[in-house]
Image (tube, rainbow over all chains, first blue to last red; front, side):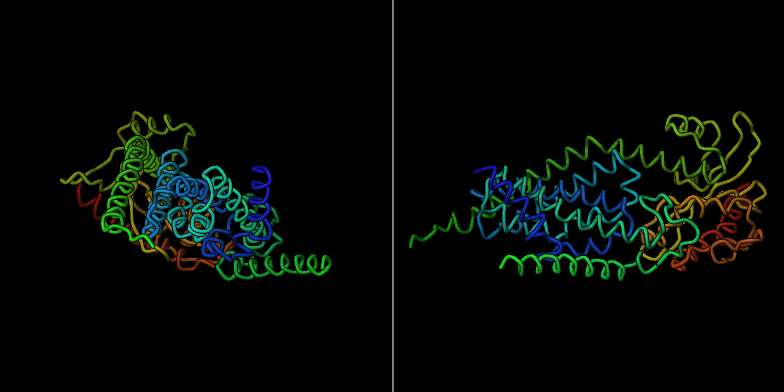
Amino acid sequence: MAGFKIRKVFADDLGANNPVFAQVLGICSTLAVTNVLKNTVVMCVGLIFVTALSNMTVSLLRKYMPSRIRMMVETLIIASSVIIVDIVLKAFLPDVSRQLGPYVGLIITNCIIMGRAEAFALSNPPGLSFLDGIASGIGYSYVLIAIAIVREIMGSGSIWGYPLLGDWWTNWSIMVMAPGAFFMLAIFIWIVKGIRDKEEGESS
Amino acid sequence: MKKESIAKKRIFPVVFMLLITLVFISITTVIYTFTKDTIALNERLRLKRAVLYAAGVQLPDDPVEIEKAFDNRVTEVKDDTGKVRYFEVRESDSTVIESYVVVRIGAGLWGEITAGVGFDRDLESFRGLEVIDQVETPGLGGRIGETWFKEQFRGKLLPLATVPEGNATTENQFEAITGASYSTSAIQDIMNSSQEYARMEILGSQ
């Protein structure tokens, strides 16, 4: 039973109920950090950590938390987790922290975290909520990483900062700017929806 | 339907919120207290590294070696309040000043750009540039922190003008970043204004 639930959580968050392309959450950071792969990966790791930790904490407190102040409590938990990530990065990975700059603080505003706390953690046990946080984080991460790979290659001719395409390639500056992310995200959603519609059409 | 008591309805949420805030503040405070020395050391090391880089000193990889090189070669000149005005850089065990470094702040696209600017001892030509802090767009203006961009300032003369990438030919030109003209001109302003500042600070105090 537990195994079935865990499988369902992962299948949901990675596929049919993916936070980015199905629920269209977390779009601000999808636009902001996906122009360079390295920043994207650190952002994703930070988000997975924060979502899992806050989901678990909210779930632990769910039976004691008065429902009318639950959003304040959730915000407090999320903000504390993000501050912890920020401090740890500053102390142990100062270069990465410097490159990410204000983006770490922006994890607080990522709707996925609050969304999962409200939709899942409030009605499920801590262990499963923790896994749901990880699954949602991974669901968010693979979409962002796919977009970041395309944007960095086309916008800077490199991948993870290493030159890939050489001098013949003219960088598409638009790919590094926010509009590039809109285009890439739209194309991504278009492809995924197309595939899923086709599958549904075949199964019905 | 059972009616909730006033205590449960009004007071409990307030007490709960207060307690939970105390718990989380304590957790973050403990983590901060344990890491604040490491963070301060990192910041300090970053500044030392930046001063040495802007002065054109070959940078060792090991943080301990960087500390040693800084202590042996760099003197901080401070004002009465203890604020650093500029850095004097010498060869190890020498009294002759090789170069000067000043830290300047300019307006970038999203926020301030803090840069270390190095000069030869005559304050005529640039020794180098290190971007200490910046929040420019990653991949565009953020490229002011890349090595190719910073390295091109070594030996350049004032006043600096920008040319497109790959076209710098004279000592007064540097290559702009395509698609990031605002960040490029912020660096141009910092570089061009830093000589006057350095002269005022360094020659004025001698």
